[in-house]
Length: 309
Image (cartoon, rainbow, N blue to C red; front, side, top):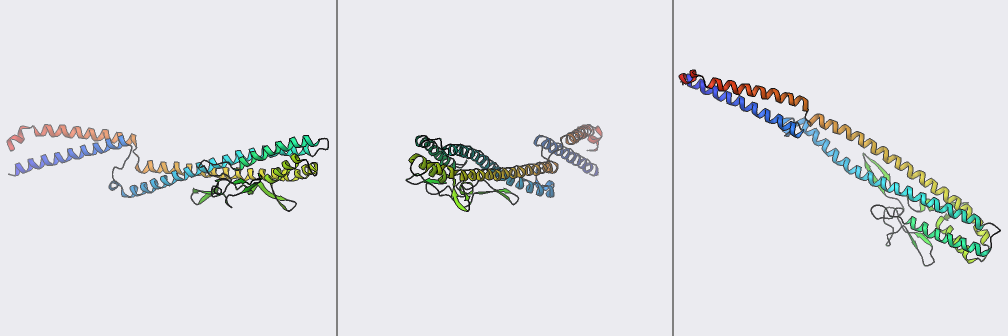
């Protein structure tokens, strides 16, 4: 009876040991194939909890990355459009300088007036540039009135701002945000000798005066030069602001990437499989498993067990 019980215990213990080795080998093979050390949270609750935190942070970082990409796109578009503003106003300044010359006649000034009218239309079109989402780039936090434009024209062709008072802000994460553009008045409206002046109105007024030919168009051209110069300065200042915001977005993006790399490293350290050491461990386990199976087979086949039983 004792011999029978001992033999049964031997078989049970051997079977359990071999089963445990097989389970361990399967676990190690799974870790190698998946690249993950933890199959369930119970294997390492502390590490699993930290991995969940890192995963949530990674998800939020992806959202912030999308916002940063949008901010970068809007600011880049604003920068490009402001340069187009500067080019057009520089051209208008050159035309106004010509019109202020005493050697031009009324017909020649009228021709310059037509060109300035075309530049005015170009500037209004630039002022109504749309961002990637279809909203007015320089229209503030809303699209810009019922027309969806930052500036609208009245029956006489005069442009007026119909957007919001402040530009849109985008969160970059970690409590940081950036304004993604400017409102039209921030660079198209300024003061000349303490008097409020609008760049679009200045060019429109000069264009009308030169085409009409009445009054003193030469003096009108001369008096517009100061406003046009101030307008170029306002555009240059706006370009500086947009450039600094782009630099800020770049810094925030670099910081997010650095933190993301550190987070990825920590995730790998906590939950990733060390392939080299795991392969070695698997080989050792398979070696022990093979030896155990071989020993069990030999012992189980001895005649002594048959005689005992």
